[in-house]
Length: 223
Image (cartoon, rainbow, N blue to C red):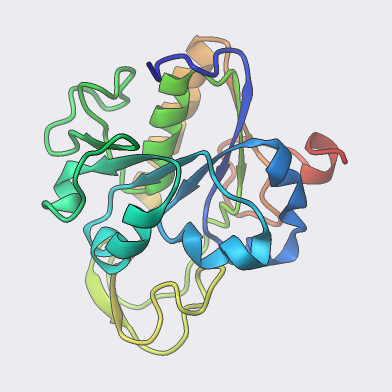
């Protein structure tokens, strides 16, 4: 029912970087939006609601399970990260992220590769939904942290790496980002999209990722 539902259309994947606070996101009310992770923390302030939602990280799902259940949109949840916390229902799909069938999964009914970043998971979902063009915003791709990539730590004090200081702040567990592997995933996603004549555009304000075509969101989302 969901495969190619948006064939030929444009979709917007909203990442969770602090650059979202520098944008007027009213234009998202007119777009088909894929939200991720703790985007619910910005609903009241940003004034939009996603049509789709993706989460794969165990700590995000554990910390946000009540909010995830309450979301009134189609949800794609990684089963490895869910560990039974989220159940399937009319709006919720648990996807196989334990043993994905490919590095980039074209049929997410068979599985989804986490790719060391939820944005990569969302790009696979967006491709399955049929979007011809995907625009990324909030993909700041820069973090301040101590320790090694993927290391599990508790974030003391406010979180300055995301749009809300409460995102992982004040003692919540999080995994340090792995930018090298994330970039490897983004290269794969770009290649897979381009093979089919699809495009991934990066409209993040002052984003540090250099792997996608850069555009100004004010030109793409004209009022």
